[in-house]
Image 1 (tube, helix red, strand yellow):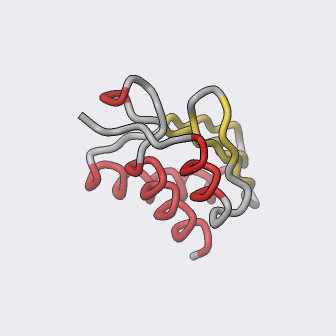
Image 2 (spheres, helix red, strand yellow; image 1 turned 135 degrees about the vertical axis):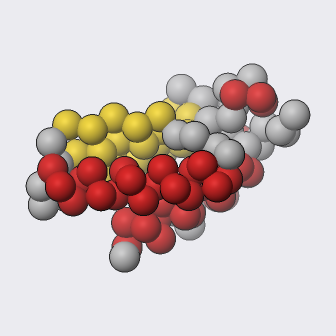
Image 3 (cartoon, rainbow, N blue to C red; image 1 turned 90 degrees about the vertical axis):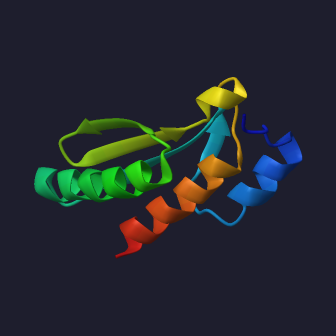
Length: 96
């Protein structure tokens, strides 16, 4: 079972992740792309990283907007280091 991060640990981790916020026991970010194809390509890239990490985000897509929410189910739906690591990977994907 994963260990939930403390409020302070979450805030410290998000200080290095631009645009990510913590609410409703999830770390979240919204991304905007030039169009649908770019948004779907982003989602596809995330899917490979998430599957490799065996950690799957909540993903919402509407045309060129992608919203990501992360928490860990085996930690009671709380934020863990697994979520922060996946958020960092998602940031690298978005920067590419």
